Length: 319
Image (cartoon, rainbow, N blue to C red; front, side, top):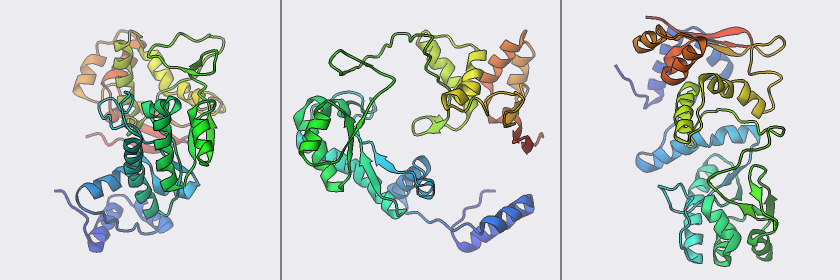
């Protein structure tokens, strides 16, 4: 049966149920206190509040001192704002105010200030080259009274500063520039010098991604790689999800592999977690093939045990 929490009494019943199911919750509530009853508006306003609080984690940002900026883009839903559109100065101003205004409202509710604005995708590059667009961006920034992030040596720097708006210059280390210093935008990138590698890894997210499951992300990464004629075998997939990600974050010396002296944070995966996985795993002829089964077919049910700092933090209940 499904229960919904609407009142303080409902919350008390839920807390008692958690403690009854696992006494460790009693200690957690003793240390952290009773959680507040969170009430949100019905309809779109409530949904938007949930999305912002979960994807931006405004409360976490406030607690850790992280500054939050807005990244408004063109009203190009299918292209994620990456396709150029013809827009007047007023249209640029209004679409930015519409997007940033929603974020600013949720930030105000959490007692957090909007820190800056940086246009997204094609809007960013249009403002580099089109004066009307750059002025439209400035018009919106003046409404919120925050700095603008942009590319030095372009209309970003020229017009933003002429308008008296604080300008924060940025540089893209992962993109190429021509002889004049302008960005070279292309869908296909040449291979980099292997002597100067760019460390990459797999991570999870919602908003930018669709899941917090690293196993689901490995599955999606394999399919995307195949579609782009870049085969990714299971060994590389697991590397990117473990040591590759650690090295990309410059944490390879402490996490990412089972080596003496590293932090013992790891999970134990079960290749027989589901009947279909058991069927396919039983026909694997190598460790690499078994890893492929895990990277393509596994989900959270395959997580048998989780260890944090060498201590067991989770164990699956087998039924």
